[in-house]
Image 1: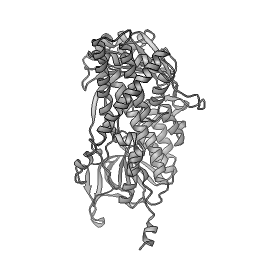
Image 2 (image 1 turned 90 degrees about the vertical axis):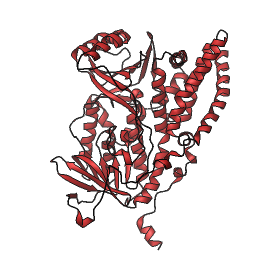
Image 3 (image 1 turned 45 degrees about the vertical axis):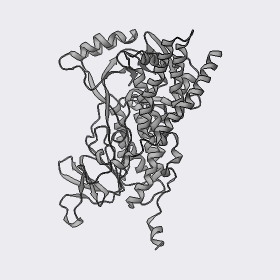
Image 4 (image 1 turned 30 degrees about the vertical axis):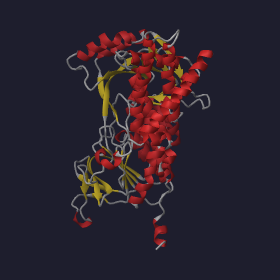
Length: 536
């Protein structure tokens, strides 16, 4: 007990100085939005011709919102706005069932948002979705189980894992039941702009005809490979690693209904159920290049490097999956949300904000954003005052930060901590993280509540992250400090700072920790048009 109190005292004194470092960096990253402003008529924008001079067919019926993309974010948003009475036109490149190796784990916080949107039945038994109650963490033959803090929720509240394509198709089916929502297959090529305002989109329909669809608000949800985001945000996409995906059959996880994270070398390996008979395996490979699947190098890598690190209960099924040969790869991407507010347009989902998929937080962020956007738009009967609407929706970028920045920062920081490193200080940080989470109590409850989306508090994340670092330093000082141990502890703290501070800076220090100081936080809905006319 005395040891824990000593660590607590050290932590409090350390965090006082560390927090001043955060404040120092608050103002330094503030100038960039002004530097990146450019003419709105970029490569993805087409200036509109006068109404009588257009030659392309147009969607003449009145539409309130055009949504580009009908993946998780686009389909959920279309259903939500349609239920609110909005007239919505959704344009999706391919309406057949997607087949992806990510977007298969929904955290409990995301499931709560799904309930708020009335879409929880899209992630149930009808798609053979599996409940997830936490994680099992493995390192060097040791393991610890980390359960979600669900004691105060009903028995139905848990994480959900499933086939991504089945989940999306169920949501699209729900969208198709709304008479005021049009779901169309087509490829959006450009955003239509007039006098700095986005008026809609140009697209090719299924027959290959060029069409135009107009609406006072266009929301782009076309995913991580978006070709429309360039003029709506300052996209700085990082590609830290690739996922190699396999499906294991005819086996059981060591801890039922839990995700399994192996702190492997060189980077983590994940296992989680996606149906009652299938387990998804994702092997993280650092960098942008992976061994070739075609010439057999990937199978060799999986057998020689990865297989020895797989838990014995899963090894036979893992090797059988490698032999079967259905090996998929996907580049992991990370991109902070750095919007360029544009009248008439908004970005959402992976086209707007991405984080490493290690923690499975992407769908939670997207669904949380949709709930927030729905609530912001709810008092507005008229969306046609684009400049006023754009100014009002700047509050969206601030109000989303507690959830998004907590999940984004945790994903980026955990990935760097969980990867193996030749640096002794990084090794100590990795060991300290595993042992800290294994302590139980607040040491496991706190981080898992952050990861699950149930506790969207960036300050709690910051405190736990440095508690791990201080815990690691404390271990080095026992039984007594030596100059080498003190130096290693110093490097551990500096390394931890080097991991988390750049991520926090990318998210925005003020938006994360002091959102109420942002003017947009208090922005009220624009006055209805008739009220403005009465003022004259």
